[in-house]
Length: 69
Image (cartoon, rainbow, N blue to C red):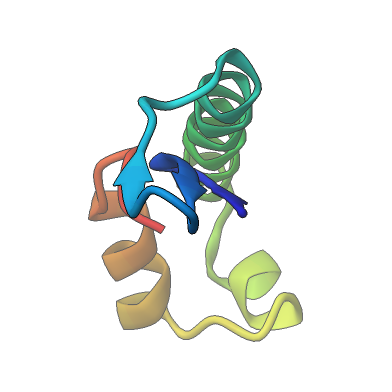
């Protein structure tokens, strides 16, 4: 089984460290969230409304650090 935290060997009950692929996926996700939050910051209220955000929800999303989903 593979996850963001690494690979689990059911036979041994051990977990190996994160794989290169899992790190790449994590970094890609961080980059996408950062870009989306920056784009939200450049928009005004009518565009937020078109996307289904009120001002409070848009500000909450923009204020999150890139590593939080």
